[in-house]
Image (tube, rainbow, N blue to C red; front, side):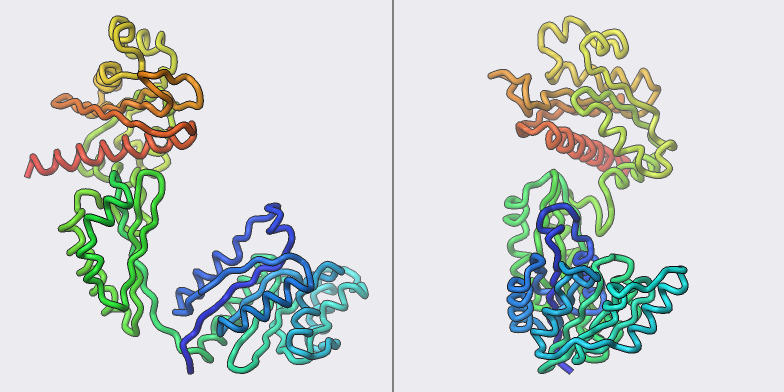
Amino acid sequence: MSKSKAEILTIGDEILYGQLLDTNSQWMSAELDKVGIKTIRKTTVSDSREDILTALKEAEARADIVLITGGLGPTNDDLTKPCLAEHFSCEIAMNEAALQEVSSLFKSKGLELTEVNKMQAALPVCCDMISNKLGSAPGMWFERNGKVFVSMPGVPHEMKKMMVDTVIPQLQQIFQTDIIFHKIVKTIGIGESWLAEMIRDWENSLPSHIKLAYLPSMGQVKLRLTAIGDNIDELITEVDELIESLRTYVGKYIYGYDNDQIEEVVGKMLFDQSKTIALAESCTGGYVSHKITRVAGSSEYYQGSVVPYHNSLKINILGVSEQTLLDHGAVSEQTVYEMANLVRKKFNADIGVATSGIAGPGGGSPDKPVGTVWIAYADGEQTITRKLQLWKDREINIQATAVALLNLIRISLSKSIEIKQ
């Protein structure tokens, strides 16, 4: 048995043209990861004989396992089968077992088996057929020089059935596989480069079988620890100990793990502290409220929100001082200060938060360029304001403001816990 490296080869012009999203390779690599098979490359090639043959040759040179999807249909532009036959130097002939399965499928659906569909049962003689329980195109399994090639349909549910029932179990019998364990630590409110600098010593001390990856996203950075070994319990214990050590470096920025979302964490904090919240959103247009209410059970702590986009609504609905708006403008610390306190009182909530800014792409000025945003948090004892200087993209600014505001709520609630203790 030998260690295994896999390459996923996706065939189809429709993917390269951007007409179809390739979800197959993502799912396949995740399934391989579960059984300790590392995917080293994903390649997409056109419906071209030359491109397919080149891709097959290159994949065979660098990988032990090559998993192929697409190009197995009955029409002339489906070239995977003839290219595989050419690559492995063998003829294509009618496979009786495949023909029986295809015939049974069409009969069960009350359809006539045409000559074109019948040819789907013609396979390279050097492959083993893989039954397709959900479609008419059989899969193909090739072996040469210790390498395995598997060709499957591009239809997702057909491919997944083959992978789960046949392909992965057979690969596990042939190849030695390690246990691969991933743990994701989610941080917020700190940039990737600053985070890397803060945990440099910790990162440099990681053992060789545990790797760290930085995965930045909107206002957040995920730290993915990947541990490889042969005992899952030992890997989990080792990673947990490393994360506990990591907290001494950047604990205040860590808000969750794996699939945790910031709105879920904030919601749990509100629920656990029996606090309610109300929002006044100007530049975010209700997006923060959407994030909060997408969490099941949010009615326990979410009182409601108002979107006073126009200044007259800030005055007439919330009660923001007209003089404040005249003196400082809607996008100002003074305005969000009032908005957060007023919405808290108006909705009889423990906490009020507010946003106001210039999302863009227009509307900026030398004093307040596009991307200038103010956010505020008020709980009756304190009011905290923050100025954000974001970008020129409207959608990005809305999302980044939402993340920053949710983090401000998280920080404020965390301090509330510390004070009580």
